[in-house]
Length: 236
Image (tube, rainbow, N blue to C red; front, side, top):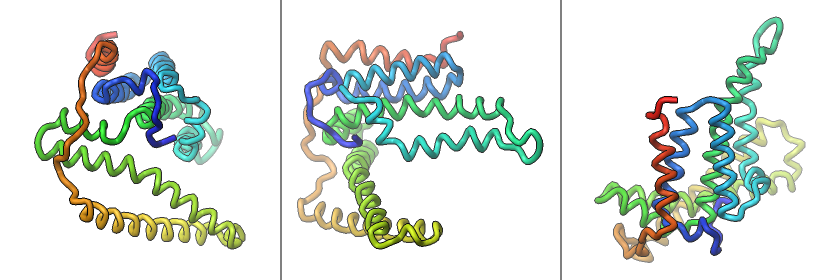
């Protein structure tokens, strides 16, 4: 779910720069307006982006299940008190409202990742940020997008290997230590192979990137992204 899937959906046909602006604007709007109506509105907008990319919301939530499980702990921790009544509802609800703002950003990110080739993302970043900073940022984003699914796959393989060898009988601390150490070893080994592969292919800081051009369908999306980005400046 966290990698590009070829397709011909509306999201696939958009210019990556307009999609990046929408992500940027939605993140600003979600953080700047910690209220229930805005949470509902940004979540509905994020679900619309999933529909534009023809993604199942349940499948996306399943892909983010670990992140969502960690976020779900925040309201519980915020509500726990050391003494009667032991749990306070108001702080837990406020924490849930603040944590809930992250969900729309994750959903829109999933739509972007599955509908945008890595080369297009790099081209968009380098056109938006000129010079060496743009080249470094574009290259970094391209490498992260390509490597992150592989790193997750390595972690799952290590976890399955630990379970296959009876690791479930070990104490939790030992299992966490094994998983962290073995996963880090695989990640470092993968980064070494990547470095060799880049040198073997004569890696260039400024390669010929795919051409980008705004089309008529991009302008409404750009307008939405700008409106979301400037929404904190508009008095309510």
